[in-house]
Image (cartoon, rainbow, N blue to C red; front, side, top):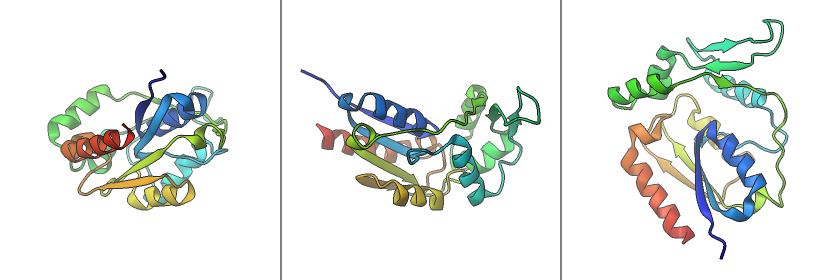
Length: 184
């Protein structure tokens, strides 16, 4: 008997989720994108970053790092403290901001296109959870993502910031339980 799992990805974790869906579709009952990247096949991370910037303008005090020199593309990225406070965790309790800041690391950047197939990635049930007050992946960005790459279901969480699991943990848990019950 083959047991399937429900996977969830948040923010850039949607990229990992998409990769896993392409690689192991038969092991996944559903993929839940929680205010996450859900890119089309052929999209690069630089495409996603440019799209986010077209909605929010800039990343404030965040830092891009250039391990190969300033004349080359950035190799990693780290969210700034002020940007995090104002745009990611603005509705979350202060102690969660402290936890976030103690755990945040540089995020590696890459520029190869993400490639998915209808046979694999497309065979997995996708569910998107919209965070209504996310100031990084703003609602308009999330809605555009949903229109371009439609999931089978969409849930919304009112009053949630980018870190839905901090700002609205009970509501997120309710949504995840509904999804789990649907997939059983």
